[in-house]
Image (cartoon, rainbow, N blue to C red):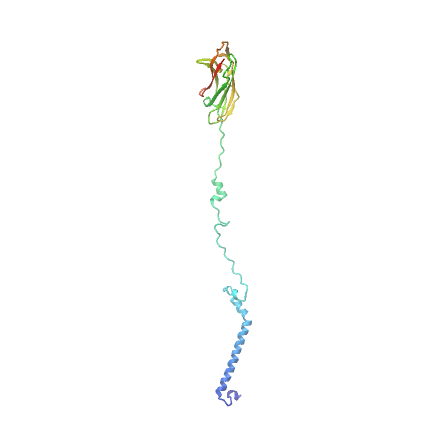
Length: 240
């Protein structure tokens, strides 16, 4: 024991203490090195776990490929203006369209009035070279010359046909009701009309449906259709 505290040998005592210090230092260094290696092998997992806390999310990516802990549910971002949740504009809203659209008013039926004689368009045609004393059939055209539809009633808009020679009135349908143009009451659209037949017996006439026996002479005669307020129409005949 005394040799430990007081080394004896051929060399100086300090040399022996230096050698002992080196041996003890090497031994302590070896122990520290062994402790550090063992700590790295058995304690590394704990350190990695402690580092991979929610407060340090980046450690999860570096600590031995550990699975990251899910973070809190993210707050949804603001709804984009073009998404389905965006409030549609008033112009595209069915309710807005329904409220702004005014109902189409139902047109009130307009009663069709009776054609006035001043709104009629008249025409006459027939044999232009009849024989003296023979009957002549005239075709009388009666059209609606107005801009609105109307009912044609010849009894309320009398149309007459007359045959003249110069200033001499030979025959007239006003002398007899059955000689006048007649027909059923019809509704005429603007520009539409009917054709009525009127027959001239080829003789002179008088009131009361009377036909005079006077014989007419060959020559020029005129057949005219007229109505109060309407433009008359005339055709020329040459009796032979």
